[in-house]
Image (cartoon, protein in one colour):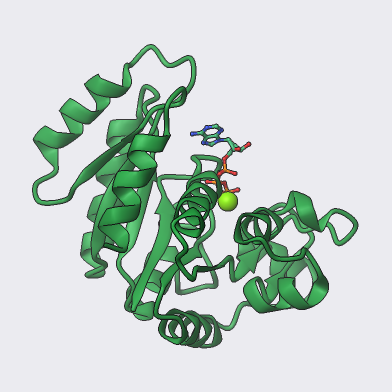
Length: 223
Ligand SMILES: Nc1ncnc2c1ncn2[C@@H]1O[C@H](COP(=O)(O)OP(=O)(O)OP(=O)(O)O)[C@@H](O)[C@H]1O
Ligand SMILES: [Mg+2]
């Protein structure tokens, strides 16, 4: 099994972008890849291709149909809110055990590269008791932590790592996805993180030349 959970320091940090880049890289190398976005909020059935699941299906070369969406993103909610709030808007709630069972099942079903994208950052509430980090830990999957190079990203990354360590979640790599227009350089961010993070590989994703970082991360996740 070569499955990894893709999490991040927060929303819009580049989890889906990076997942799609990895999927395309592996597909180009002839690998048999799968990806999942089990929980999707802000989902518009009129524009499924605009959703994270739509992007993942496109990167997988699969149709963006209801059947395919059901297969990779079974829990879809309309409101663009944290999943517990989005579910509540529809009189629903997220069954944490079912979510974990789904994630474990899909992760073990494929022998090739497998990605499970979370939602937002590591401490996003899923219900009254669980956050994303609990989902990661209970799924038994190591994760990739996606962070940025904006001012403040170092604290966000180190805080996320502490939160993950607290529940025993393994971190395969930290992907530093360059933040456009940041006063802090990508290299300075990597150098500082390296001083504070021991034993976790750092991968640099440069905006204007992301391929080297994507290829390196792809090898780490699935040699
Ligand atoms: N390295 C990159 N190069 C170009 N565009 C990027 C890169 N990283 C992120 N983006 C763009 O930034 C936006 C936010 O990225 P993305 O949707 O991947 O974030 P996310 O972490 O998956 O967010 P969410 O929490 O909603 O799932 C998207 O428009 C995406 O295409
Ligand atoms: Mg996403």
